[in-house]
Length: 286
Image 1 (cartoon, rainbow, N blue to C red):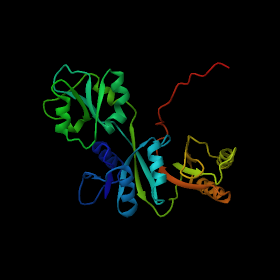
Image 2: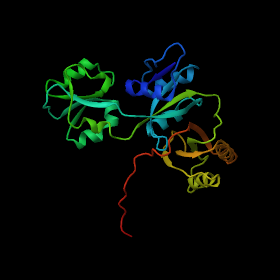
Image 3: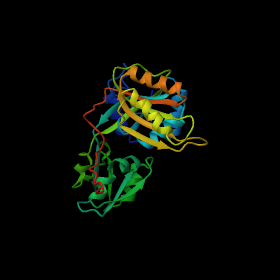
Image 4: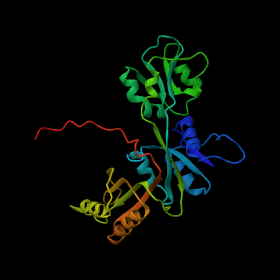
C-alpha cells in the first residue's frame, strides 16, 4: 500500500509512484490512487505502525532537504527512513474561464509551494486554499474573472490556459521520496544520505569536533543545518553522498564519541546532474 499527506498534490505524488516503480501490483497495469494519510505527523506515524505501507513525500531536493521533512522524520519513529527518490516534471497549469482575468489566483498548499515565485513574478495575487478544498469550491472562489492553478489533468471543461502558464512547468523538476519503516540501514554502493546528529554536550567547539569526524571519513557535506532541541543541545542535519562502508565508519566513530545520530534517508541512484537551486552571491568588499 502507498499513501501521501493530505497537503500533497495527488497528481504529482501518483506520478512519482509510477516513475519510481513504488506501486506496481501484478494484477493491474496502472498505479492506483494513493491513500490520504492526513497531516505529515499522522502520515509518518501510520507508516511506522503498518509494515506494508509506505508514503510518497516531497523532498525539496536529495542534496538540499526540506527542513520540515527533516524535523518530522527525526521526531518520528526511529524505524522511518527515506529509501528512494525520483524527479517529477511539474504538471501545474494556470487557467481561467474568461480571456481576461483579475489578479486573484486560487491555489492550494502544494501549488503555492511549487509555483509562488513564478506567480508573483507575473504580478498575480495568490489566494491560498486548503488542499482538501473541492474543485467546485475553488472555482466558486475564483469567480467569473478569477483564475486557478491546478494540475493539468484536473482542468474542468470551459477553462483555458492563460498566458504565462507554461512558466509553471519550466522550473526544475519536483523531487519526491518514498518513506517506509525499515529494520536497519540498507547496504548500498553509492547514495545520497541524510544524517541527523547531536553532540552529547553542547559547548564551544562541539560542532567543530563532529565536523572533524565527518571530514576524517572523507565526506564532503552538501547540506548542514542546526535545529534547537527540546531539553538538550542543538541537533544538526546533514546531507552528503558516500558509499555504504564510509557511512558505517562514520556511524561507528560517532558512537565511540558519544554523538547521537540517526540516518534519515538513503537515496540510491539520484541524478547528481540535477542540483538544487543555486544562488549568485554578492559578497561584501574586504
